[in-house]
Length: 474
Image 1: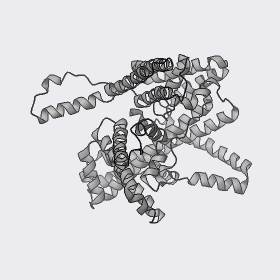
Image 2: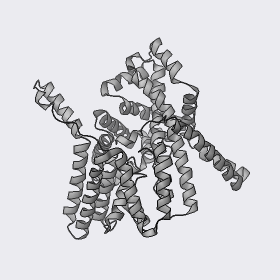
Image 3: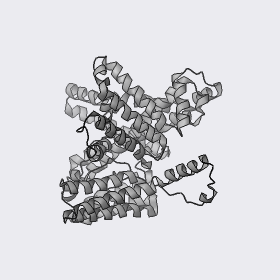
Image 4: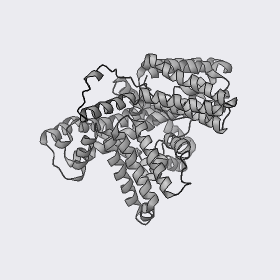
């Protein structure tokens, strides 16, 4: 079920919120747990059992660790979660590579045709990382093991952030599961955040998607340099507003339910280094890898060579986490290589050049990386990049198609808004209005704008003009 679907907005959410707020305090977790199961089962059917299995295993592992079976509990948790990921997310990828190897060795793979394709449960990378972080935190003594499965199950299945993050750690909401901060102010903040996230998705991300999808649907060898750059810039805006929009909606829904989720994005495209980019982009994932993988490997405590190796491992895994494809692995290693270069000395050079040059450097690296993230395969990515680097006029038929069908008024408006709001200009404007007009008038004006924004967004929802969130597949 999508947050941008009319069934969620006008049926599931109102019914759930009514029941949730009218219910006594002691059964709110039960209601939230059941509603989250219904939410996930709506689209995933029997695959909900994978998520429940993960929750049961890690709940049990927490008990084992608490009772003194520390290594057994931790090892079981890590093996179980990585096995789930390996089977459901990477089996098909591994099998395809195995068959490719057999073909390369000229060994017949005809007998392997009957091997079934395994379905990918939505959000499996998110909830397995959440439950695994719980076991690791219990092992490290940073949290106490939960003794209430409904409470723990609610943490794992919490529908606002279940299928596309942000990755929420048990330590962050442990107390909130017991004592929820339900108030009119929080509910109001939650609605505002949800509306902004929904608008990001429906108005900006989908407009940018219409451009990016058309550009990447054509053979890259037929594209002009201008359209190649247009396509990747549109995709960069699409993935940012798609994912940050979902995160805003998740944070907003959390507020409505009495939870405070941590921020997941902080204007990554204004970064002046790749290190800064990863402090601003998908914060919950980058901090997860820092705390549970990078530091476990030794971090930067064992000399430069080991630090660089650790970065290579972390970003190779980061790429693989995003998708079962060598494109994603290369994307991760590509970013990791620039992090190493910045540590080696590139940062000192960048500090001596104008700020605008540092911004351009980051944007170029990120845009080149997005080509590998978006392209169907490595070869297509290389061809696409060649059109970005070496001038190509393209073909008239392709350019005419994009001109007449790609850029209508709404699309142009959506892309333009994406370019503007990928920077903190809105925050600065709001602060300026508040200081000039006063907080009361400024807030009233903002509320009117939010109502108008919600009405406009609903027209997109009613027209069924939405795409699934990109990060659902992760």
